[in-house]
Length: 406
Image (tube, rainbow, N blue to C red; front, side, top):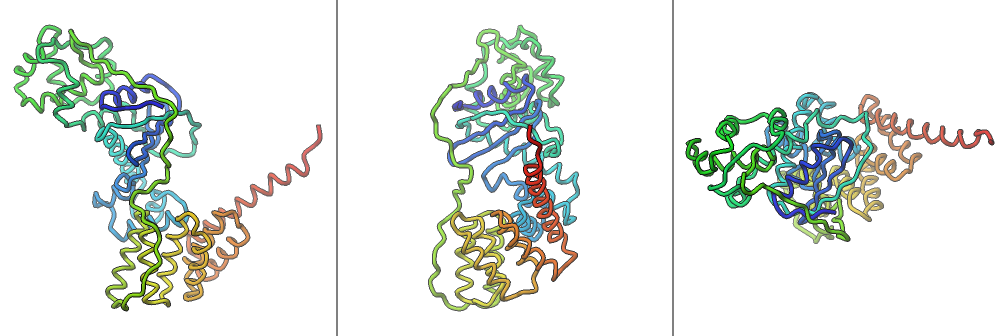
C-alpha cells in the first residue's frame, strides 16, 4: 500500500500506469471515502465511489438530465433488481445509450478530479481479469483522465510549491513530443510551450506571455507535472512513500446512515403531510440512506398502519440494512396482504429470496407477480434469470453424476 500526501505524488502514481499494459485496479481510501479506478491497457474501464455526490444517477440528476421522478424510479428499480442504473434508464426510455455513455465519462472525470481535491490517500493496487461483455466507459484514456484531474488543481500555494523558481530556466523534457501528441492542448498551454526555448527563465516567459500570474501558473502546472517541461536547475521529482500493515477502510461504509429507531407515538398526519413524507422516504432510499428512510417509514406506519406503500418501501430499505432480513420479509408480506394485486410487491419479495439463494420461494413470488401483470418486463426478466440460474446448477449436478471415471 502507498501513502499519497500531495498532488505531485498522486500525479506520479497515476502516470506510472501510462507505460504499463494490463488490467489494474486502484483503490484510494481516505477520510471515510473509498474511490476505485479500473485501468485496462491505459484506458479507464470504470470509476466508482462510495460518496452520494459521485453516483452516476446523482450526477445526471444535478445536471438536469433526469427529472426527480425518473431519478427515484431508476434508483428504486436498481436497488430492487441489482441491475445497473444505466441499463434501467435505457430500458425505461429515459436516456439513450449515447447519453448513458456520456454520463459515465462525466462520472469518471468527476471522480478523478475529486482525488485531487484532498490528496491524502492510501492507495492499494492489484490486477484483475476484465469481463469482455462489459464495456463501462467508451474509451476514456488514462492520460485524458489525468489531464482532467491535473487541470482541476487551483490552489495557488500548491501551484507555487510544485513549480520551478522564477529565476530557473525552463526547457522541454526528452520525448516530450510523445505526450504533447496525446494531449488536447489548450491555447494557453500551446502559447507557453512555444515560448520555452531552453534559454529564458520562468520570469521572462511569464512576462512575454502577458498572462496574469494565477492564469500563468495554473496553465504551467500540468506541463511541468506531466514532464513536458522542466527546470534546467531543479528537475521536478516526486517519490511515493511505501507503507505496509495499514487497515483497509470498509467499502460499505455510509457516513450518512443513522441507526434504525423505534418510533414514538405521534399525532395523525394530514394526507398532504403523509404524501410529502412518503416522497421524502422514497428519495432517501434512492440516495441509499436506508436507515434514515426506515425511521421515517416506521413513523408513517405508526400514524396509518393500512397503507401498503409504507410497508413496501420499508421492506426495500430494511433489505439493505444488515441484520434486518427477517423484518424486511415480514413487512413486504404485510404490503402484499394489504394490496395483493400489486406485482411490484411480489417482485420485491421474490428478489429478497433470490438474493439469499431461496430459489423456490423466489419462484413462487415471481409467478404470483406474473399472474397480476404478465407483461411486466421486470417480472419476465426475473423469471428468466431464475431459470438460467437453475439450469446452470442442474448442468453442474448432471456433470458430477455422469462424469466418467479416469
